[in-house]
Amino acid sequence: QGIDRFFEDGKVGFNVLPNDLNRMKKKLIFLNKHYKHISADCIIESKKFNWDTISLVLFKNYVRALNNE
Image (cartoon, rainbow, N blue to C red):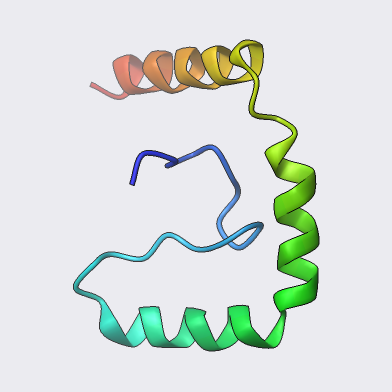
């Protein structure tokens, strides 16, 4: 938890609810099958983790949440 909306679903992993075992199983199988590609994307995406980028993403999510209320 805690990385929602930082990454497009499927880019470096998947958003799976803890009690959705069927989806979790399917996504783990997918990740295993596509490990090299997902792993390469993880390395690329990890470079975005600096305070400038993180604060901008958090700000955009905060504004989006305010507008949806």
